[in-house]
Length: 171
Image 1 (cartoon, rainbow, N blue to C red):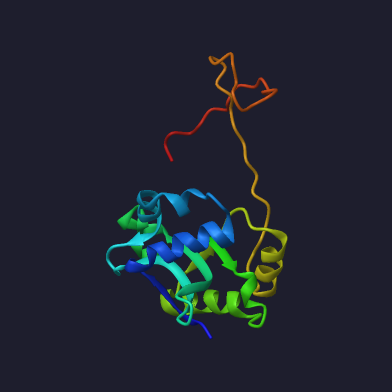
Image 2: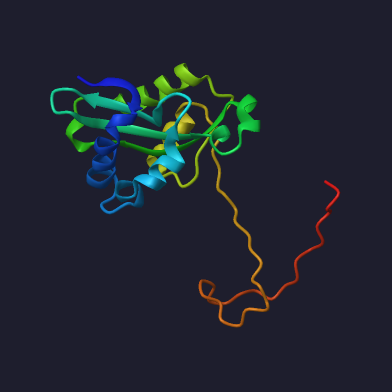
């Protein structure tokens, strides 16, 4: 049985091990505590912004759900109570508890009462869960303008030559 709660500051090594072993081997958050702290350490609450399913028998996490409150980087946004979800993963060891991932999300909603929850880069299984929960889902459209002054485009194979439209700077 797992104890669902927020990740404690002294558990960063368990969190990083989970990210490496169960999310993605070599992931930057599993190797770089400075980046982990920058992105997820909540100094005011003395915790990491991860909901975890802590397995006390083995001293491991059975599941994690990372989140980033908008006010993490801009305290003027505290009133919005909006959060972005990050890594959401249940280990393969937890085949018995099919609702564990949803339990993490429910805990997060119950504890923080967010006005809005957002996520980018979800897979089709997670999209099905969000639709079941009546979340609004969609496809992100990305646009760019290639800098015409750079002749060697490093990430764009065939940039489209078009001038940017005028931007109304009075907004």
